[in-house]
Image (cartoon, rainbow, N blue to C red; front, top):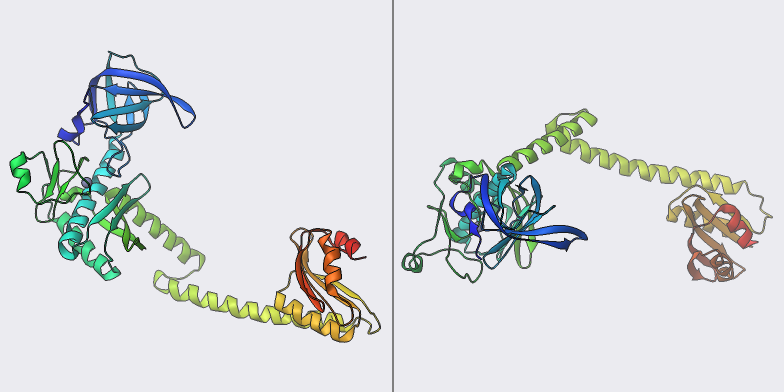
Length: 385
Ligand SMILES: [Zn+2]
């Protein structure tokens, strides 16, 4: 039996009573819940890319709401008795936020269609994000123009109409539509901006959307995907963004206007310090190895983590001075070791084989091998012995 959609007539109603026409236990996401069908409901199901309403029936949490054909099923945490009368309560804060986002999307998509001729080919409205996909490319400049026009429509506080026109009226109405529709078609009109087939609850007046802001634009399947925020969600995002900026200005003890310059000069300074640090490290290592007696044939060094290019430079100096096998390990027992091994007389691949016995990964030529090993200094020394 068809479920009467009470939200269709009044998107602002929060409480209702209904008769239970069926309640069956089912397993969803590894837990038991109760698939409950009522003769009528205020719960908007997951439909058209929008996540379902939240709330409770007889005080029991409604975990999900799905629609199949004309039947709406509520998934409850515990059962209700078939044939009994129940009372339902919608989480209106959640519903109203969805209404704000969805009505904002309609104005935006209507303007994209009329100005650029692109279709809205995807819509997703969940608790965390609102995205719209268009089959054409919009630039950042286009977005700014669209944002301005949408917000103008919001300031004008225009009535939003949700109706089921007669077949005759419908045949003479031009409206946006994402898919082939069956049954009675509900048309949502925002005069001067949009006319679109849609089953979802909307705000009564555009002013209730509060604000629409695009927060992200990306290329997507030959067109674009936009992330938007309307109403309270936009306010929360604005607040978070200001908090972030304020905490950054506090950490960097600078004003908002200097933040960008401050961070980029810090970045440049870090890069130049790193270059200076590398050169000092190399100088120290070269000083260290100059102290090794010249008659030492084989040399093995274990040092703190060092850049590969420094290791290579130091190893070249070692093999010039010592004619046996020179090994340079840098790192720590905890993090593991990176190594370069070189020799002018021996085949270093033989040493690589010894290290492979303690799961070293590496390779190279007879005169030099390199790699890394997750073992302790003493384990490495034992393998090399
Ligand atoms: Zn819609």
